[in-house]
Every structure is written in structure tokens, then in C-alpha cells.
Image (cartoon, rainbow, N blue to C red; front, top):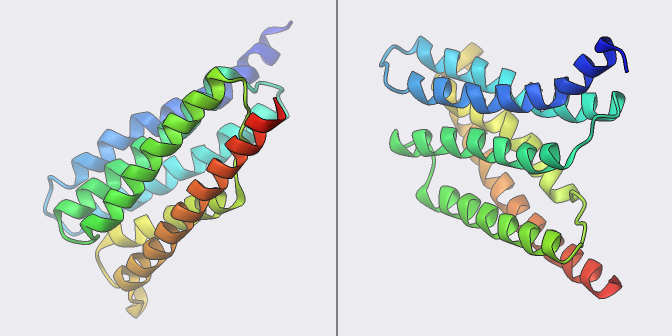
Length: 187
């Protein structure tokens, strides 16, 4: 295998680790009180969100899908989203119930995936989960900027979009559960 092909196979994990690495910088922006730091946080969050798409794209394109990638990708997503949500909770831009539901769902799905892996059951990503993630990737930057650009009610749009993603999150937990039980009965 030539070095060019090997380098390309490293791109998906590099994108995943970039997402993980950007999370502390997003969190750090909350320790600065300048309004423009919200824009910095939003920009970093958007870049990190793009790496979520890139890791899957590169993994498929370069035939670099791996067990490590399948486990680390959702972990990187959770670190990014929950890191931002916890900081937004601290400044009062999201409700504690939102964060509790997201955190509970993520712990539940993580446990379910572990049990599924132990039982050799594969649970594919579900539509509600994908839409939930996409909605979070739009809502959270709107909440991070904490201003109304061009007169748009960014905070309100972000807040209600995040509530929609809460309900999609619950729906995806049901989908994952059904996927597990269906996969379990097939083995």
C-alpha cells in the first residue's frame, strides 16, 4: 500500500479527534465575557460539526471504516454537544430538563450499544438520531452567539429547535431499543 492511500485512511480518525480537541476551546470561550466570544464559540462549534460529516464521508470514500471509528464518532459527538450544552445551562440559555434528557438518552444508548456489541448485534444509526444531531448542530451555534444578528431571534430559534431535538432524541432512543430487540431476536 502506498503512503498516499495510508494517509487518506487516517483522515476519518483525524476528523473525529479534531472534534474532541475543539470541545475544550468552545468551553473556554465561556470564561471570557466579551460578546464576540459567542461568535468564536459558534464558529468553533460549526467547524467541529463539519468534522462529524467529514469523518463518515472520508471513512466511506477511502474504505477506512473501523471499529475504533464507530465507537469514537458518537463519543466525540457527545463530548461536543454536551460540553456546549452544559456551558449554555450555566449561563441560563437552555433548560436543565433538556440537558438531563440528552444526557440520560446518551447514557442509555451507550449502554445499549455495549450490550449489543457483547451480543454481536449491530444497531445501525436511526433516522430520528440523524435528524436530532443535525438539528443540534444548527440550534447550538444560535444559542452560542447570544445576539440577534440581522434582527433574527437567534436565541429563540435555537432554543425551540433544541426542544424539537429533545423529542427526536427520545424517538431515537425508542428506535435504537427496537433495533436492538429486533437484532437480538434475529441471532
